[in-house]
Length: 313
Image 1 (cartoon, helix red, strand yellow):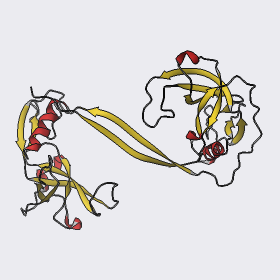
Image 2: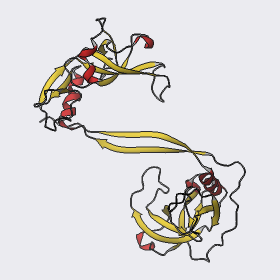
Image 3: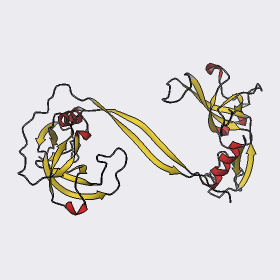
Image 4: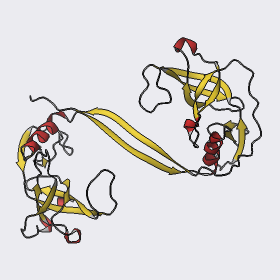
């Protein structure tokens, strides 16, 4: 059996969201070194605050200031901090119930080692020097043996309220495509499309999955398909993607390669975007050194009859 491929893969994007009145006040308060919770209809104070009562589902907006000191309710030691975490040296993840709150806040605790952390440990907020209205305005918690801080009575109203946040999301992992897709990728390096045929329903899947998703049986018989294919469905892209050097508008389509029982996707070029249509016959265009087609272009053949691809929409 050929060696199965594997490669590091990073999925990263900025997640942008707007804030309601409660979250807006909470994050703006952190910027001003004020910790706000919200009082529920049964008198509990929730930190971090939510906008709807978890028991009654009623909207709640009664903001309450709590102290910047509190008690660790549970914890776990982090031996190897990852990129983007609050501290770059080993630390503890802790749930802290701030004085005046009835729920716990998750954050990092700066401690010299796991022996210095325990449930019941008293801690206080260490504020970040540069604060922008984000949970990272709390740099971390630190052990504290002083008197409990007395919360003020802040009304939760600030100038220049924070109304939205951008949270970067990132996932680093090693991807192994498996036996079937390894063979598919290796064939692409030779400018061939190779799928696998189901021994039961006889459909040819490209890219292959190693098993038929309909019949649930393993697939091992390799079948070369294409290179020509038919556009089954498509969309016109009008928003330019970051780090993608393609002018908009352009067309992305599902393409049923000749002999395949499943459509794959690819970009259509070599034709005005408003002339792309269902049934258009296309062929792959490869660039020098590429392991996959750069795009597909019209072959000049007559359009395919709808009945030849209707099951592949």
